[in-house]
Structures are given as C-alpha cells and as structure tokens.
Amino acid sequence: MKRAIPVVVLSIAGLVPVWLYQPSAESSTVQATTPAPSTSSSSSSSSGSSGTNVVTTTTVDTEKGPVQLQVTFSGTKITAVKMLQQPNHPQTTAAVPKLIAETLEAQSADIDTVSGATITSDAYQESLQAAIDDNAKAASASPSASASASEASSQTVDGSALSTEKGPVQVQVTFSGTKITAVKMLQQPNHPQTTAAVPVLVAETLEAQSADIDTVSGATITSEAYKESLQAAIDARG
Image (cartoon, rainbow, N blue to C red; front, side, top):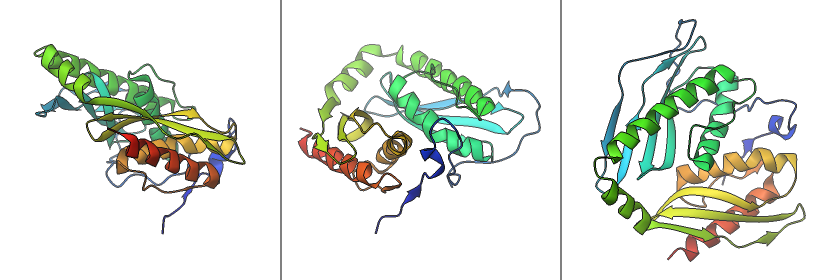
C-alpha cells in the first residue's frame, strides 16, 4: 500500500511557503555557527564511463547551517541533485524539493529564491553554480565524446493526456538511456493542491525511476493521473 505525503499546508498557495516534510535521512543536518556565508576550499568530481559526471560541491556555511550538494550531470545536462548537508530547519526541509525541481527544469543556477528560506536558497544556488562550473571544466577535456554520448542516449516522450474532474493531466518525460532525467507537466489542473503536488511527484519520480511512487495527500486525482501518464511514457520509450 502506498503511503500518502501530506501537503495540506502547501494547498494554501501563496500564503504559507513552508512545506512540512521530514528531513531526508540522507541529508546531514550538522549545525554551523558561522554568522555569514563562507565557502570551504575543496570539491570533488568523478566521471562515469557513459559520460556521467558526479560533482560534490564545496560546503557553504551559513548562519542557519551548512549547505552542500552532489550534482549528477549527463554531459552538460543536470540529471540529479542531492543534498549532502542542509540546515535542520522546517523552511529548509520544505524548500529543498522545490529548489531541486526548479534546477532540473531550468538546467542552471538561475532559479527563484524560496520565500522563507532565503539564506538556504542563496547558498544552494552558490553551491550549484560551483558544481556547474566544475562540470564545464571537466567536460572541456573531452567535449565531443561527452556530447555525442549524451545526444545518442537522450529521448523525450510525451505521456498520454488524461481528462480528470479537476482538469487535464499530461507529462513529458526525458530519458538518458533507461534513466529518467526530467519530467515536465504539459497539462495540469489549475488548482493549488496540484501546484503544490507536482514538484513532489517529479522529485519522487526521479528518485524511484518509475511510476511506482506515492500519491500526494490532497491531490489524489492529479497524482493518479500523473502516474498513469508517466507509465505510458515509460512504456512508449523506445
């Protein structure tokens, strides 16, 4: 049985920016006492045989706590972002899924600051930009091989368009080989619960790499249609 992810607070769109999710067990929540942002002096990256590059960013210390990312690239495309360290604070916990979803959509560090988590957002963007810069340097060593591998395996598939009582739902899924690297909503109900649920659904899809994900509480109809459209895209992938 699938568990439900509460987004009750998120349904009050525009009024309360805090997403009350529990912190990821994978995320470090070590507190820092530095009063102003400062960046540590080291970072690392590792390259896979298929053009995948994983960059562990420098740690940005803020008055709320440390921020550190692990960013996965396929060529120059950002395919995944994982928080290695983040402040142990409700606003941060709520902001992280949105920051990651916006990153995958924008494919850059030019994303919106999350209201109520400005300090974490700024540190996230700084750390993300450092990862993008590091990846660009690594890619410059063999740009043609990296680009050709990425282009050869990349495929975008539109899922089926579904009509629900709330409105139409349709997803567009990008694959790199068999890996789901991005999900975009082509159609979705114009409803606060849907607006709040979509980033959660996308983040869970990228984590699960399948349509076997949780239904979002308060957006059950949209969630079920999303999963059906997603599965259709997965099935249609060549």
